Length: 186
Image (cartoon, rainbow, N blue to C red):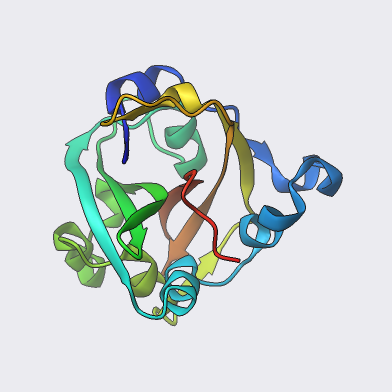
């Protein structure tokens, strides 16, 4: 079982690149369709796992987000956001690590409900919102060193990730997703 070392991952933030700057030949063919898919990852994971899907909340606290996250969201250096880190499990295996940043200024009015997601998937709420739009993806490769295994086994492969900014009635929210070694939906 893999667990992100939140503080270590925080200091070793991946280099995110616009998906248009990544040549498709650089992406692994089997993963490319998942990395570049614009649909709901939650819905896809539920489908390929035949409903054997759940969300494990690892961290959800108010803090000042990382610099690149603040820039993506148009936040100031002292602006706070609700940072949520979860693992998406399929067949009781962690397939995806997701980090979401919800700026305090976005959690107003009807979006105030996002403060108390608990173990409900954010993706479901985003994709059922008729006022949602999404910017194109940024892609990254994350060194496996950003992971630690509770069984002390180290995985040497790099992991692929994506992130994008969602707008809900004009309010920004960022979601990043890192595909973990157990992610094998095919």
